[in-house]
Image 1 (tube, helix red, strand yellow):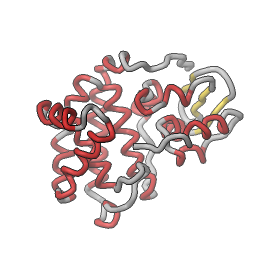
Image 2 (cartoon, one colour):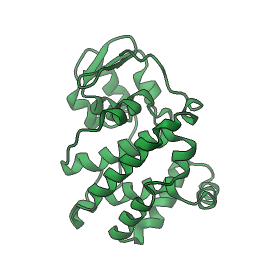
Image 3 (tube, one colour):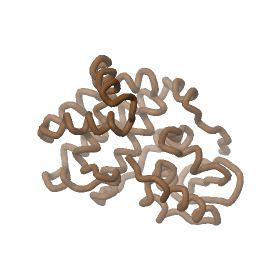
Image 4 (tube, one colour):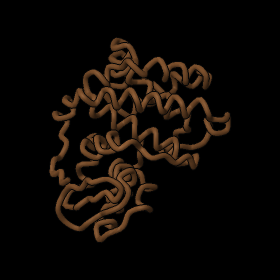
Length: 222
């Protein structure tokens, strides 16, 4: 299947059929967190400056009460980086059990899943991998979720610019997009690279990998 669409911020307001995928992804993440040791919770994630526990804390933003989220946004003066910092610092005193309980409580809830399901799903899947990859806990992302993430890359994370002028081809599912020098490999590696994770590049090949790698190196993931 060839998909030539480019996700825009406006398009992210659609995709309400993705909410069951968000629910399943949250449930899978919660199940993983139940297995982690104290040392694994403190392991640096793929997000610069964030441990595994910090990534989990960040993911709880989607289930915050609307008033709390808007209050944090006002304090952050609409800066995404300041907003992330406020929310991660708030959770610094929470135990890992409390973090897990909050993730489990968010499985069937969340403003993001209700209003911006496409953005919510891609953020969740990418950050799930940000946790798993440094811990060496590989998984096969269910195809429906992987395809949804590839079809709806996060424009706020720079994905649109990274994929510009390249042909991206997944080797493990029937998915490809774009025109130009080819980048081919596992769909998960493509998704991680588009999200700015250099760790995804190692599994890719093709004439376009060098171009993609240059674009990925320009920004640190968060």
